[in-house]
Length: 324
Image (tube, rainbow, N blue to C red; front, side):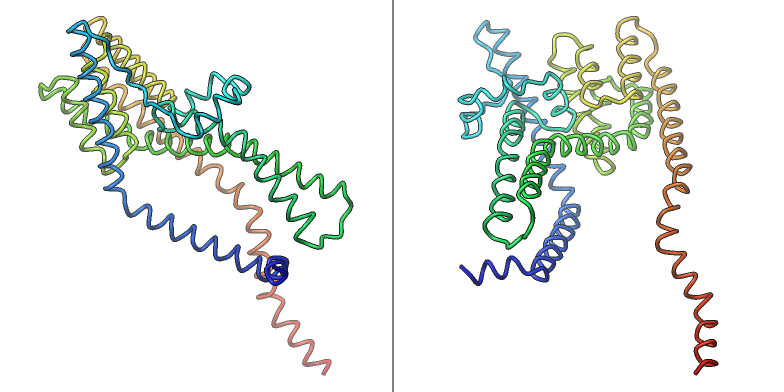
């Protein structure tokens, strides 16, 4: 035990462990990115299961029997803990369910998981930091400093799930928006060729999967909802809620109006595709315009010292030789 404590309190060993974790995370990220096809197959299978559930629900409603619920049953350990401690009521946030849906997680189980980690992550991090500061290491610091470290760990654990969820939503929305104008062009071609809107959306979801798995999943879900929901406008509204992007919301509104008033859908799709493409170009130009300001600090820190060494180095060497 003493050897383990001595090993964990050595700065070089901690640095080696950190480097190893960083290397492992990098390799895991690269390898997980190479398995996109399997992930796409799993998501399409999930959509097929949802379609089958919708079909069973529709048949059961036609027969007058009790309709099964489409929500995933969650009877695990986390669900029991959340219900027993009444965490969902104490930390109730009406936006959490919508944000989890925007992140691509379906059903009630991700909501329960989020509340579970929202409560127990601060406790676990606080216990680990307190054990390290007060027991393991010989950290000669005032008591208030150690307590402040524990408080910081609690804050990180409390806001960590929210930060993770926000980052996941932003990355997923970015992937959807990048491929959405191309999907609209494909959808326009399918509609003008005479395909119905359900068949066109299903076809585009299959073709766009190689470019954006997230958009393929959303279009597949919308195709299933168009087939089985009682009001078709609900499918367009659900797509706008799941993505929460102004361009996609405008497309959903245009498709709803075309469905309601009988206006030509191809004209609306052509206009929306052009607007989304211009919006994507404007976003890229905004990032390019902000790049020089972001490169100022790295240039000052990394480039200028090297430049001074290259310029002043020969003169300094000459002066040292003359003085020698």
